[in-house]
Image 1: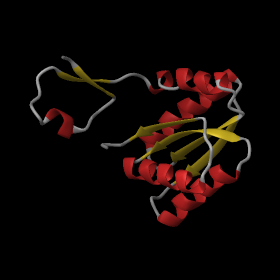
Image 2: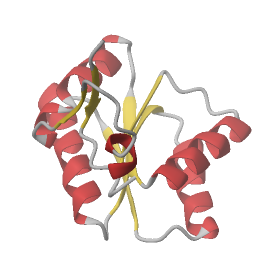
Image 3: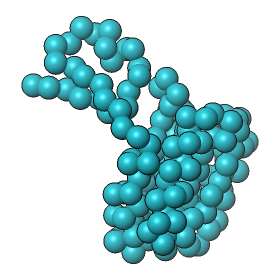
Image 4: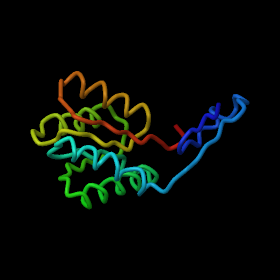
Length: 139
């Protein structure tokens, strides 16, 4: 059994002394073309791309998602935020919820923020056809 953790830098994964556990990394521009294509193939009208603008790792990741969407001709609702403040996160979730065209979500956020967005979007009953989160840094 080989256990591969893609794009992990979390030392807790490796501190367990498990045999055959490996981490790997790939360029961020290769994360997104397939999910974006899947969204488009599913008939998604627009994807919300939500990210922390103050954290370079997350900003760079979602800029790659924006490029993939642009290359595939998928319209984007870009939302940038810079804090984990609950009022800010609520405002981001409301922007996604209020857009009648947005049918998918790509997020580049801290893990706790991703959980918060998922819970909030679910509570708002926003019907999304797809959701993808890239978490970090050091999550």
